[in-house]
Length: 344
Image (cartoon, rainbow, N blue to C red; front, top):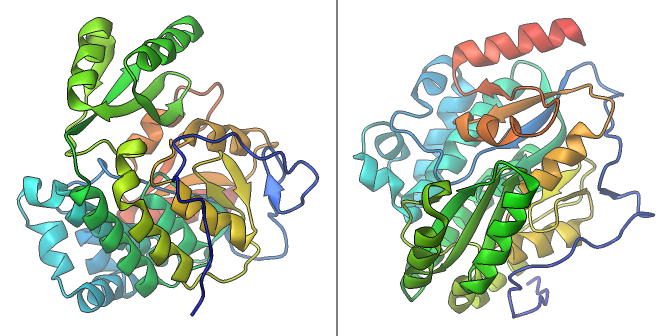
């Protein structure tokens, strides 16, 4: 049995390791786009909050590869994933223990549909639980193992004790961004997500979040979630998650994977495993991951697999950022392969 030891503190925040001389780490490095005749793209996968009833249905009807994902997910988890994703009540789908495996299923279904049309990843990154889909796309983790991890992660996060809450803040200037960070600190909140230059997310005890929202006013919006995700309030369930991550059958590979707790791309399996654990309590550093992609002389398109609306919303706040191509329907995948393939 594979046993790997992590810090049991499940750190709330951590600085990016330097890694500047390590070729496996790409803070703002080049990504390999050569050596293949396939359509090369940067694969992006959404996180919780992106789910919509009916997601993945058109893909499953159009692509056998996508349909097979729903079969496999239903078999592995003992749940009818078609019913959950396509016809369950919105509040049922939105429950954390349901949302996480459902989003993973749809994201991988979209990815496999696109892959069947010749699409290949130059890099892969996922927001929060989307990190598991990124590992599947990068061929670092098999789909069945990712499903089990997503289901466990959802159950653990939903079962965390305490009354937690989350709030998103729109900061329309650097000054307002700094003010939001300082105000959150005064209210004893944790940074849960650095999504873009204009959007920050904070987590903490519900009364503290309420006072923070009252102080900031219209720029702060409470999120409809049951707990304070990506914060110290996840520590009570961190040990069980650590055990699962330590035993996850990750394999070596060459496709850079976005590490959401550091905001860096890496191919090192040990670093990827550590990030998978740390991200339970650490903030999602999505802004830094997207800046790493945009820092190169832009080549491969950014493509969102699964419901991609939120991914586009976060990216548009970065200067000169291209739009994320949504590959969540047959039309979207056909458009992707025709437009990107023609430009390659």
